Image (tube, rainbow, N blue to C red; front, side, top):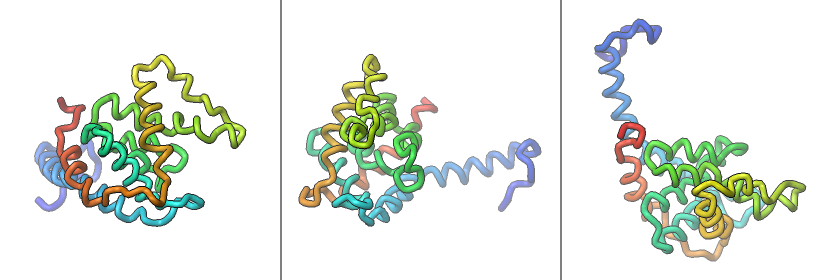
Length: 185
């Protein structure tokens, strides 16, 4: 069988879906490779910033690594802005969606909300509410998200910072994305 027999999903057979499942598992097993390839292409400067999207991500991950964070958090720091390219208006949610099956609830929440928390540093300059994050002040990961933004995001635009290369993080990315998805546990 090289292709399924159906043209409408409701007409699919068990044989069709077993066939597709094999292909989908193979495709999913290569997610880390696709992410690394995508990240390696983020070499253009964030317009107006002093570093590229890739360098910002590498600095964030390098800072997390040097601070002794878990591999999961290091990878999350590396990928926290992966959505900037395709979802600039909701990049945090995009990055969190990519990570969600493979990371803890805490890591997912931090990445999902970091965009709103990051507004603390700039929103007031643009007529916005720098304290938008306060609506989450009673959430159990509130302080963790503040810490993430302070330690790994807002300070990672420095052209003189010595970050690790993407190759350094590849084994961590592969390890995290080879986990059995939390949704299946």
